Length: 448
Image (cartoon, rainbow, N blue to C red; front, side):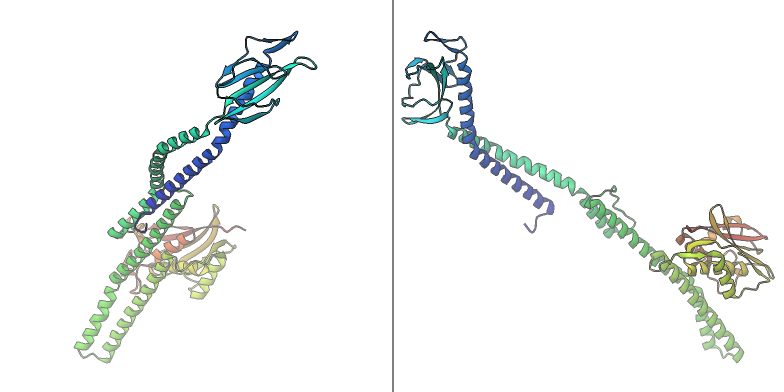
């Protein structure tokens, strides 16, 4: 039994159970067969005798039987006796020799020699003190033959019943377990191919297998996202760390090979420090983006005044009020993680300052329009070409790296897009080369 498949075990249990029910039903039928046979014979006897009553009349003491009088029917003999129990009509069965007294309306079993009979008497009155007896006599049914017939039928039907039950049970179990086979096959394929993009894809339903398949698909989706995030992090980090690592390595080799002056040594250490800061900042941003993607860093959504948040960020960052202008007079309430939105605003303003023209301006605006909360950061900088506007949201993409400082890693706008999506919002961009860019965050307003 241990080495059997679950489908085979269930099929065997179904077959055994149905066979046991068949045997119990047979035993029940055998148990009631005698009573049923006797009751049927007694009912037929009673009906036959009673149907003959209307055909019996006595006129001036003379017996007259109608044309519908039945003397013999289905093994039942109907006899007519006088009041003093003299046979007037009918033929007594040859083997019925018992001297059975008359009892009106009672059907009973009578033993005559080695034979058993059922007898029923009815008194048919013809006045106050005269009448005749009607007696029905039938040989008691042999229920043993019925039992034998039932056993013969059972011996013939039981193997067929078991075979059909086994085949039907196997087909039902196989069909029921088909989703499990699909789950197993898909899981094996994913394991062998090492491809987490595969899905079981069972139709949605409320049964156990549908819920199991949905749980597996959800697990595969999370695993795929986790491995993809890990792969992305590894690829991004290994790709972007090569440049600062090469610079640091080159500076160290140069310092070891040549005798540097104090001023050159200070410049080398400053370069190494800047590159180390860049690496540290980039790794921190990559880790945070990865945590947000994997859901290990959960956004804490609370009702937040977007206007107040913008004022706080400007005050904390110490932006020059002559160059960074804030328009946020009225409260704009959204459900958001204040820390993440602060990071988003800092990245947008930082980009606007970095790519703005010398002495240029940045305008921050918080307002409501068309049922949305809008946070805009506009600059009068270099602008972005139309063919590059879709690419700026990609990691490590920089429109014009030569215009930015060395600390930039091209992760700011990618994080901005990610934060917007976490809040159920979106980013839009309007930009003209040589005129400037306008980045706008669209968020749903909070219910009051």
